[in-house]
Each structure stands twice: as C-alpha cells, then as structure tokens.
Length: 294
Image (tube, rainbow, N blue to C red; front, side, top):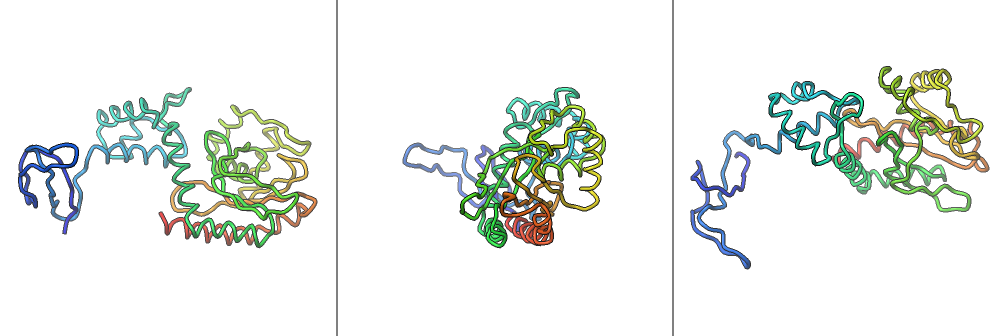
C-alpha cells in the first residue's frame, strides 16, 4: 500500500476515499474543497516543496564548510533557479546564512538552534543520558557531551556526582576550542585549509600558564591528537582542572565529543588520561543508543 496524504484541494483526484460533502467543526465550516485521502501508488510520496527545502538544509548542515549555490544544486539534484530561490528564502528566515567573506552558504541561527535542540532531545532520551550518568558514577567525576557551534564548544548534556569540589556545568555552557579536550579534538580533525583559516582568524586567549596559543605549537599538538585519537586538557582552561575526551562515533559527519574532567586535588593528569579506554567504550555505547533513537 502507498503513502496516505491528506490534502485540501478543489479538484477530484485518483483513488479518493472521501465523498465531496461539507464538514462542520465547532468553529467553522469546511466548504466544497474537501479533505481527500489520496493513495500514491508504489509507496513513494510525491516530492513536495518542503522536500526541496529540507534537501538544501541537509546539504548545508552536513558540510564541514560553507557551500556555493552551485555546490548545493549539485548535492541536492535541484535546478539552479530553484536552489537560488530557496536559498534566498531560507536566508531571509535565518535558517541559512551567508559567510561574510566568501558569501557562501552556511547554517543560520535558526538551523543551528534546531540542530542543538535535536541533539539535546536525543541525548536526553533514556539510554544515552543513562549511559552518561553511568560514566560519571563509575569515575566519580563530571562527564559531558559537547559539540562545536559558532566557533565555541557547547555542552549539550552533562552528568555529575554531587560531592564537594566537583565540577557542575550545565547544558548550554560554552567554552573555547583551543584549550578544551573536545575543542582541540575538533580542531585536530579539521581539513588543513579550514584549520589554517581558523588559526588566522581566531582569538586565542591565554587562560593559564599552560594554555597553548601559538600557531606552531598548536599545529604540532593537533598532529599528536590526530595520531592518538583522543585529546586532553592539562589545566589549560582552568587551573587545577584536568580532563580528556574522545569523539562519539555517530553515523554521518556530525562531530560530537564525550569528555570527563576533575579537580587535580582528586585526580592527577596521568590518572585522567588513563580513562581513555573507558571513555571510548562509553562513546561507542552512546553512539549506538543515539543512532537507535534517531
């Protein structure tokens, strides 16, 4: 059986399962143009305008860099006039945005907010959040899931063991990229041209005496991170706090990381990085739970 679509139309349609009679609700009357249930043979829903907009949004959101309208048309299979028209409409509504320098198309504020909300909703489903809490309980320290949004690290889910001296961050908290474990992991996996652009344009504050800010030292550090597959933070953002993180291996190109952190009064840097194997296990389990609920 095909998909069933409810449509309000003036004309008759093939294989209709409703009679053309007026219907009345508590507040208004539906006149001669009727709600018709139409079966589309073959099980495939005919493409609607919203499908084209969704295809453009998916292409832009799935890219690691801003795209030209031509590239979007090629990725979606839409014609150039249609792509240009929809890009303009989505940009006017802040779903998409134009890169200031190149005028290429990237995710706008509304699409970014939607993505964060969707990730938070999925991660707060029973299994992913339960796994995060289990990680925090097993290590006795703070654990969080973060992603990069608008050049900052954003916490999208967190769990902590409530005890004196613990770290208690919440959803929505933001942090820098160059001195946090997940931020550095994200930068280390950037394409070379994107990383070079970031190094040229970013302002890298020296939060502590251990914060790396120079381009040469950061590039060498990112090469190490890329080779080992995990990143750490050795009092680089906050003095007296250490952490380490790994990528959650989700399907697709989304970059989301899992990390733990603790005060040095309870855990040394060497003890912290020894947690990488358990982090990788939990990251894999969270990815499976996340993908299963998607």
